[in-house]
Each structure stands twice: as structure tokens, then as C-alpha cells.
Length: 181
Image (tube, rainbow, N blue to C red; front, side, top):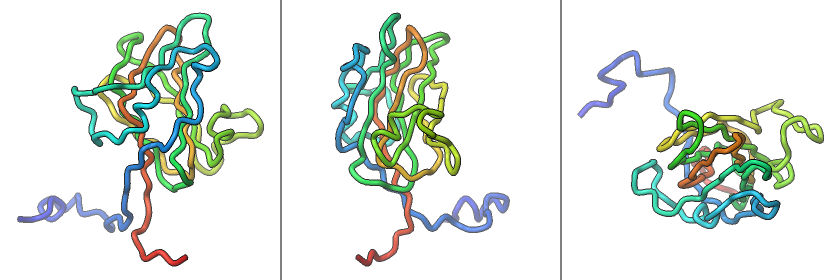
């Protein structure tokens, strides 16, 4: 059996990626905005490892729901240690205009950095985007750019909208070499 890039020359590329990827579930929920009066439910389901593909059998999902006059729904998770990689968010359901919603994902080496909006206290996207806005639909999964982080904050931006999050994974990207230390 041949490899797909052997069959189609234009898929060969310059070189294979020698890095490995490992999906890491959050180790704890640091904070959620329900403490401030927002509608956030089932955050503990984000701590449970789940399939790495969005499927119809969602099981329990974490719901972020924005209601008029209340703070935006958001959750801040900790992956347990700083990693290089990305964050993958699995959206199970969406209630919003056109069955779409806008969310923000902020990454940080500290909980404070991930919690803080872009432009506040000198936060920037200088070397890598750490504050990303996405328009999401139901039964979808998106992955951020690569960065260094330990914490991720997910915030629902739209008024009178909701998202059901099946899972959030940190994607640890590394060269799989012998570790000395």
C-alpha cells in the first residue's frame, strides 16, 4: 500500500513534521463567571477526557449563556503546566443569530494573563496571537495558533446567545526526543 503523498506528487511537500502532538485535558477549573452572576453550567465536564472528534453523542457539555444585563459567560482552565502548542475547542451546540456565535480564547502563561483582555495592562499579540476571536457553529472543532501557555480563558461574546462546549484540549506539540533533566 502506498502513502497518499507518493500517489499525488503535489502532496509530497518539503519535509515531514518531526514533531509529536498530545491532547491534554484541563487539570482544573480556575474560575468561571457564574461567580459574577453570569450563566455558566457544567464546567466540571471540561475536566473529563473525551473523543478527539465532535460527534452527535455529546453527553454532558459545559454551557456558556449570555443574558441581557448580566456579565459575559466565560471559563478559565488550567492545563497543569506550561506547554508549547495550541488549544482545541469542541463546540457541541450554538444558540445565536444564524446558529452561530462569537467566542474569544485568551491564552496565558499565568491565569491573570489568560483572564486579561487584549490591550489591558500591556497585553499584546506581539509574538503569537494569545487573544483570538472566532465565529463558531454547532458540531465544530477549531484549533488556535501555536503559542506558549498554561491557562486558557473561553468567553462568549454575543448577547442573548449560548454555546455548549463538549471539550477543551491543550495540544502539546513537541519534538519527541530523550528528556535529560
